Amino acid sequence: MQDHRVWNCALVSIFLLIKLENIDGIQKWSMQFGHTPLLERFTWKKMDFAYPDERSRQLAMASGEYIPENSLPVGIEIWRNKLFVTIPRWRDGIPSTLNYIPLDANQGGSPKLIPYPNWVQNRAGTCGRGLTTVYRIHADACNRLWVLDTGTIGIGETTVQACPYTLNVFDLTTDKVLRQYRLRPEDINQNTFIANIAVDLGKGGCDDAFAYMSDELGYGLIVYSWQQNTSWRIAHSYFMPDPLAGDYNIGGLNFQWGEEGIFGMSLSPISADGYRILFFHPLSSHREFAVSTRILRDQRLSQNSYHEFQVLASRGPLSHCTASVMDENGLQFFNLIDQNAVGCWNSMLPYSPINQAVVARHDEAMIFPADIKVNRGLLWIMSDRMPIFLLSNLNYTDVNFRILTMPIQAAISGTVCDNMPWRFISNRIWWD
Ligand SMILES: *[C@@H]1O[C@H](CO)[C@@H](O)[C@H](O)[C@H]1NC(C)=O
Ligand SMILES: *[C@@H]1O[C@H](CO)[C@@H](O)[C@H](O)[C@H]1NC(C)=O
Image (cartoon, rainbow, N blue to C red; front, side, top):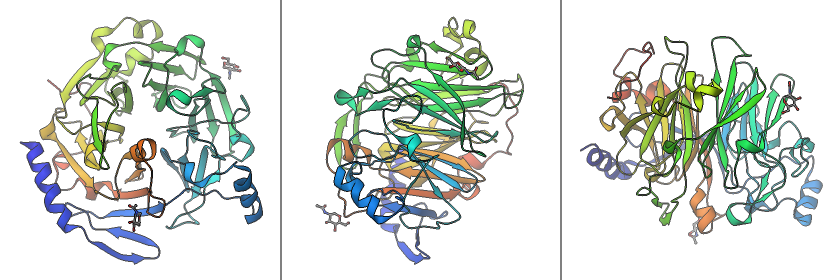
């Protein structure tokens, strides 16, 4: 029923697509559902880096240190006037993995990326001193940037583990590393691939912090405690992919990603019991799962609480999801990669397809939404055509990578996500 509606809307919307005029280099796309504009902030055909001058850029290209076609952005984060963009070292010629764009100096267009905190700390394979490969990152309310360096170069069969998995926490106000923590050998296994991190700030302030890292191919959840400066690994069968959900059709390609387990995570506001709820989903699955951080934060409890993990209703077909995020009001947004779309769910309502809506969809601009963030009332979306990059070839005369924004209030207005007064009060979720 719901799917029918979504598809009808989608069909109608294709005809509604009008590219509006170019205002100061910012293109506005009419929103496909008619009410909210999706603002195309930045677009790139290829990623470029802010070399100190054109000569060093040319030298980097001549030496193969920079190969423009090889950079695929996968993660974003926003902190004050910095928009961070991460690029994994899947292929050669990626000069820097953690980068930013100064938002005050760039209103649109295709800005060159500036390595964060600098070039030297982005040198591959310089274990302990530089970042090798970074996927999704998180800036917390204490002005810290949480960055998991996987230490890997390559993707799939070609992967080389140049450095150990290392969690780096930067002080964004000084650009210095506050904490560096190598995952313990017991935290990972030979299949480990971690591309997502969630950061849980508790009631106890900035020191009451935990990071949750999802091991997509090793099927685990690694917890890091800031206070204890230690980590542990949790296993659960809900971290595994659904064997029936491994078939994908995206960007005109059919492919199978049958092994992709626990991937996107989002954290609820703090509940009445003092804990948050971690929502998570395997990539190859149509389901969301949930567990209280009361379980995750306690090493002993986390090893012995199978039944504390909850199963939510299926989102239905065409609902593979990469990244998700929940705002301070308990409103969750999630990327719907099969639909070139972003969905919403108001966690005051039971988790089910009738309580979810599509807030943004664009069949050209949103092919493979890879990351999503909420910042000061705005939804930030990055799309990158990843399957085409990995399985076919990107067309480098076309725009491939986009960062789009949408005001949250406008995005949800008129949808089921907007039908309740805001406030996350309950210490339970209504999924029964
Ligand atoms: C945290 O633990 C690591 C060892 O795993 C150590 O190298 C580091 O110095 C510790 N940091 C703090 C702040 O205790
Ligand atoms: C590549 O993209 C450009 C610009 O959108 C388009 O004109 C061209 O036809 C595309 N080439 C191929 C082979 O699809």
